[in-house]
Length: 460
Image (cartoon, rainbow, N blue to C red; front, side, top):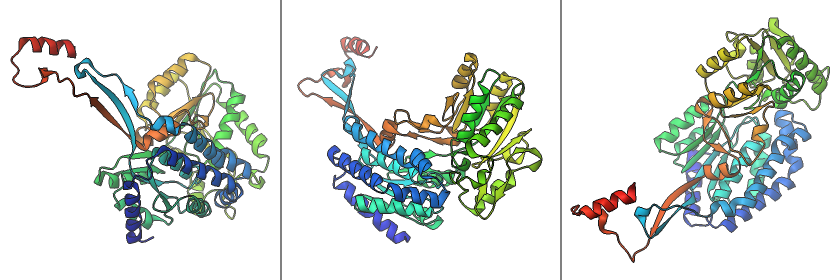
């Protein structure tokens, strides 16, 4: 779309929002039900699109994308009425004869910009939150996942008029054109570099924004961990979607006394889960494009590979790879990996490790495998990160009962469930004051000692 077409679309959405059409809760729930039905209807097409873009099997596509979306939409359908109601709060004595409440209201016209790694989930999940909160939406899916963008556009066209929800496809030109517009709220998922650009543009309009970014999410394994189970779960989380998961364990930090044993278990689990020839495994996906494939191959140091390392440029596949003896000076530790390469670093002293992690960028996720309660307490209380798990990986985002989001360099704001509803809502604070009495103590002239004493009593 051209800049003019995008501006015209947004103006139509502004007019639609101003009409009040999106405000009734019954309307919002009805739209969510339409969306739920369409996702179920197009399940096979969604699976096919995800396979075309990322090589995802039908099982993984449902487990990690459309199934999550259906769960989130159904959660919205069940709870939107309750969340949209005003919430009464206590009124101080100084405001005698009034009641106070918070009223969630939509931001209005919103923009959702989604990434390519989970192109259906990370587009439709925040869409459900935005609809539940009563907004209009322009969706901008990634140009790197065109098949999924097409099925998203088809679903949206079938469910909603463009003045309510619309999809804008395309690449950088369309992204730039959208960010030049003044929205009431912007929701972005993607890289830190692009997130900074989004924040620069939204700052020009003082537009509130949620940024879901990434970073180098560490996975700590100490001496007390169940190493076999830790390896099983790490391998699942790391190589899911070929490592192209924002909350995948980026690297392992393992106690040196158990590091060799952990490496053996990790290699055994790769073979158990992906077979002896993972590049021939039909359920193992692919890298999104040649650019990212070349970048990932450049991060592999053959001298430090203890398993995997094979690549198929024609199929854009890289085997699950383990690198041992890695230090922070290696290229693989210089950026977020976002691929099927697992560096394993070792540490001698847990206290020193915690001190070091405090100096690094705040990651989107952090994982700890341990049965040492003091280690668990130190990690959960002292380290700053978006979210994480104890003795597992990734699953903290698989619930509508907890918000998901980053902190610091890994993002700002959160969504899922009520956190998603709140992210797309402004909460007005309102005092409803009665008129039959008007306490005089707040008005000038301030001369009465009695009123001064009374004021101190009310405000103490």
